[in-house]
Length: 121
Image (tube, rainbow, N blue to C red; front, side, top):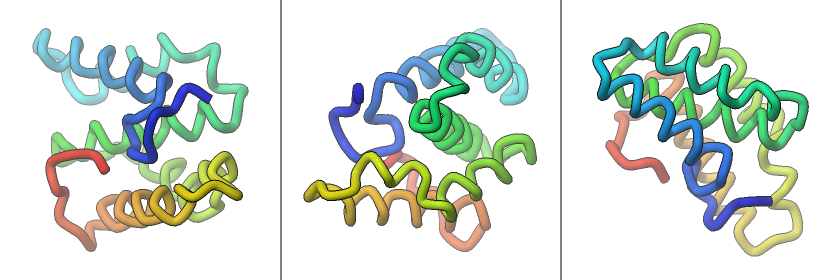
């Protein structure tokens, strides 16, 4: 696992997606274009459940920073969080509760019941 923390962007997959996403946005692209580029560049990771979870959560977070999470990300991100799929790698570690709290915040933001704090947890 290429993770150095429990935050949504604190792993290799999410960081790579973030860099791709930001490049498109800084180049004048839209959120949808940024998502498409990041997903295309990460398509070889989609078959791995952990990598897919990291990618979906990171892109949903990045999109939410622009006040828009397209349905193509919102529903899968909710599923990742509610199923506990991305928490399994944290089972048995002292960081499980911390990562769970991060994902609950993420779900609250997706559902509009929490303000986006501006920095990924």
